[in-house]
Length: 361
Image (cartoon, rainbow, N blue to C red):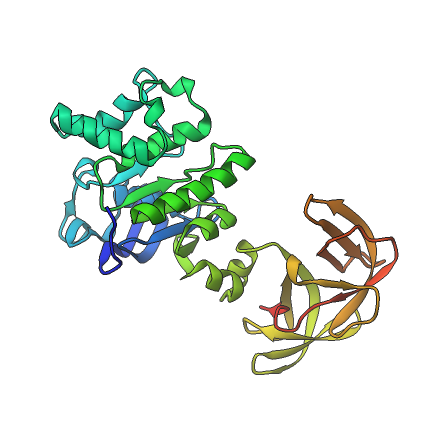
């Protein structure tokens, strides 16, 4: 079942899709192009309405694009110009829906076997394939149970087993962890990543959770208003965002009211609350600009520090492994959040903002 990374399993080229027709047409996808290689996991990330679920459904054959092409391996399944649109059942893709969509009156075994029976495989072959996939997902002992007798995490695994049982070239995951509670989501996230690596799967996954996308995927496509805003590895998306939208979507940030005073290439000098600070330009960085810094990059000091502003502590919130502290000036126009290991006493603190992590857009 292991696959090596060599060729594209999925290719989408210049895909356009509208809801409605004529004057009432509402463009949802506006020229999206992407590829998915063998053994790779790509996350479609973005806010509600960005087009990520529509793109997944178009690949699955559940939505009809207006133009562009979709190919699975060397096989074209949609070509707007040629008028080709292969139905969903012929695309041979594994689908895991947000709701899991399990048959309540069928056992785990029968839920997983359903697609194989539709393909008219023999009973012995079906039994072997289902047993193998249930064993791989740690569900072998649950084969005769019904969905209502399973936990949410177990139901999710049954849905994944059903998608994997006929070894499709690509599995499509639509918000696969969203129905789980917070603690179970973290466990399921680790399980899903381990399963994908162990079985060498190629997967396209929709999520609105940036932490989930970074944990599970090899590459992220961040969609914004029907277009790809930026794509890259989770690390590159987080550490080197191209736009303010990407920077704000990919992390927890502080915004600062800042005036750009000078700029020398990527080096920027700012004025924040009467103090001069050094920063890094990631956009045009001229005049009134948007300045942000990740919460975890702010360093708290009781003594004056380099590239820092002084603010009084407003409150500290206990998060278990750390405190999140909020600092705010008397006018209320400058506020910063920072993480600390210990609860801080009330008073003024110097908040150091490393120049390479203080971004100007």
